[in-house]
Image 1 (spheres, rainbow, N blue to C red):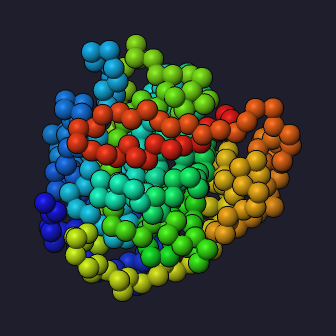
Image 2 (tube, rainbow, N blue to C red):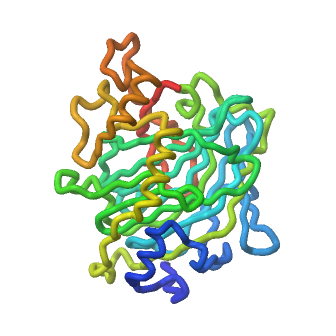
Image 3 (spheres, rainbow, N blue to C red):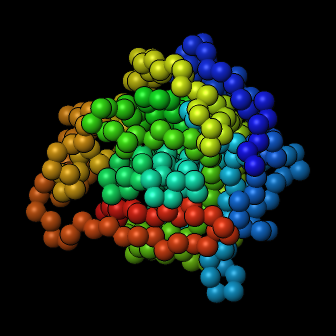
Length: 343
């Protein structure tokens, strides 16, 4: 049953969009966990704190196998602004994947949409990486991944991660700074997410691919791995996916303010480690939505001349499929097609 709580149903206004585009979300309402989210799977591995505004999800090993956890929004949304402050596990975290994402895989098993923040753990002394990606209409064979390092340790304190999704644009934010913008093009067609989705947060064992292509795996002697979530923002248009959409007149997102576009360019120049737009070994020509930046291209060629410079490969770039983790009745692991990137 979909909650129709009016606290989460709203009409977008131009002033609200301008507020978000300028990178400021401090005035948006923060919801308590039980008002916006529900337990998804993991039994005792999800804990809601006494204040009701924060939740922990954990990964450990029970009866010889990985035991993960997660939660899901009570409403299903068509467009909006969605955010959480997250503190990631510390120390050795190789193989651990924490995800904050939108998906409708339970409703559209063969043609689902998805908008992803994925946090990829690492060996001791190496930094966490962030990966963003989108799928539309089941287009999992056309990956649009980007991967970044960070200028801070995400395990030391909470940092805000946000998704803005409109009819024609998707923007990813870290601490209110846009780090990636995807504009819908005609050539993308159904590859751009367009169907109502839920919000999810999960932690799971991605040993087969998450850290250096599976070279380093989860070591459960460091468990439990705990991801902490707070400051939940669910500011979107709540809909019933079985009925005609009520949000067809949602205004288009204006251009990001110039000062924040400058910050986005600076972040990408300093911290981007992979982008499908420059992967000449994977795509012969950039996809239609790619905006090629010569400085980005040059820096990535220096970072990895094989992938980004078209040099001869000694090892084939390959795909793997993540081994599904049982998540109760959920089929969320349809998102399992990923690409192994060199670290």
